[in-house]
Image (cartoon, rainbow, N blue to C red):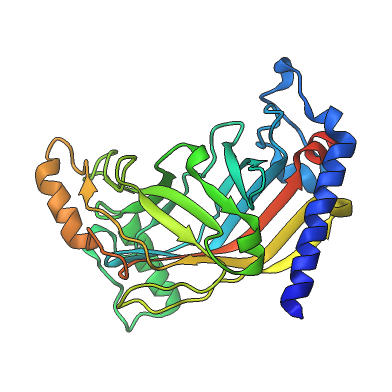
Length: 301
């Protein structure tokens, strides 16, 4: 009964979005002079970078990850800063999938740098320290010569992102597929040290359902979150949802410590435990997803 009701709500929501778009679609086509700058207001303000200059875009997407973790090999990095995925979508006829369109300013996936606990040498605070002392110890490591940040970046164009809203809502299958690479940064590693590349990306098959990873990982469960319907159906929010994947693999590091990368890459591989086969890595992305009719976003300006 619950699944049936959810499917009904989702169908109504999609119908409402289509009706709103049809009613105000003449307002959705921007003149070339105004195509690169938009100022939506009210509940639509987060969609300022929706690619409204593309008249084929029917929906605007903003997904904000505010917590969770990203584990590759031996290193688990907590997500304690907001990572934003934004852009627009064009429906694929007779399909539940969409074509993803890059954000208007090109920042489809925010380059949010997160500190790797323990830095390059994996130094952990002594167990006898209290919470405040441990935080100060970790801050000292992060800001020192061995401190390392990890930034997840898109490894391919935004059009390579795959989104299935039905899977997202019904907690089954792949909801979001992201091809990414992980940049590792500190003074020693330089500015071109990556795990993953355009040629060999890390492919995240994120689900709100339950994963089926190889050993030693065990299945984990995501969540669609709580659904809110706003602006007479023109805006949907999923709050507190969690996208998960622990069945992906990660390649070796490349470009670290150039021009000595032949040596430094091997050091990074050893420290971070890469390449890491499927079953040794985990991504848990928790936060909020907002989906709005592009025409309604434009009309709010």
